[in-house]
Length: 91
Image (cartoon, rainbow, N blue to C red; front, side):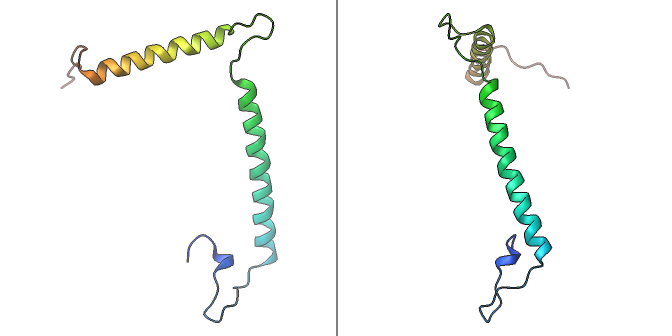
């Protein structure tokens, strides 16, 4: 019947009965999920390195993140192109 058992109708077009407690718990769970999701989004936005407002330059963590991303991308591209050394066999 799927995950939406409360909406599964019978052949007569009637909605199957669901206990009040199940509905209440589903609504409370949905509200907690939505509140937690918005709180985590806000926290993630605050954690992202940004440009310093006073100096108009990126802060040190933003520079480090940019360099690490560039090194990772270069390593990935080199391995995918086959120009690098062959991987070591551990057989």
